[in-house]
Image (cartoon, rainbow, N blue to C red):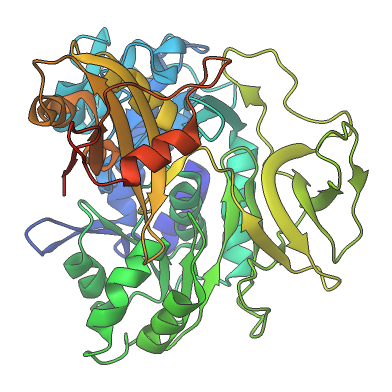
Length: 500
């Protein structure tokens, strides 16, 4: 990584490598020379890290965070990547702490949020400011741990190799024809597989990477006005942008817009296309396999709703399921519908702390997603794994929210589920059974006090007298849905308070 940065530095040391939008509306520019120097300083310090114990890196949108990431990768350090707004740091049962990491690097807010969970805590600048001798040269390659969405339970730490991560970044660069003339605006959290690929893609191409210290539509609009030519966003970003852009001139240099993190309905897609004056190309990827499918820049026409064809080196296989009891579903021919399995250069090595085989005997990963693959190779995702709740592109594990809510002294029982709104966005709903002396306000205050991130806090709390359960003791989802949709009747069974 640093060798590529040093090459770019030699060619254009004073060119802007990273532009970060501040919360005050200004921009902070970091040159290639400065980014390379800061990354090398972090690498010298990281050389002393224990080879197998991972370092937790909370990666915000600043050049300081990006330089620290590059330095850790150069030193071959294993990294657990987290976004700045995360409740995993303070949760001792989170997958992050099960990895045994004792070092945390990040912005001040993250260091405070972690409390005493880590023996060593460093701000980016403090970490690389160590004036001691450089650590030994790296004889290993980093493993990168990223938290899954928690689609089948609580989030797990998926272990990726550095070559696998870089393969995804190179695919982005080549498929979307990113060059040093581009300005790549990344509006999504950088630690996510999508954000990380976009970040590394821009750096490997020698393009200017434009990031946000805090997300706001004002900052995104400013980035477009400043000449962003490639935009990475989630469906919610485009839904928020479209009505504003309709009253403004077209973004002056924008040539490509990418969307990932969830499906984009036809109406939102049409509105975004009209507002941006370029089509929005949906990307389908997962933490365990990186970029799976997309519509390359050279392709100008594709089926409505499709996420494109398989990415370079990726093989797709559809398992046609006609009988739910069938334990060995047949391989489907193109044009049929079924469950998607993938194999490619960015496949992960497995989940931390698990010895359970994660691939089929012939090397495919079962995504669990239902898809249609047409005869021309275009993939349409019909249904993503349904257990997580997609809140503005952030995947929230209901099981984890249930566990944290259940730790409140007055919550006797809890069931968390997602509910889709008319605009296609999802909301978090929670049905709870409370002690008689407890009100909704107390539980919501607990959630907002730090137990959960703002996007994890239930939009609505429904208080039930008892939790409906089946004869096997499981929560009866249909009964819960019926109970939470009915208006209160005397005596009240359900009362509801919106948190937003």
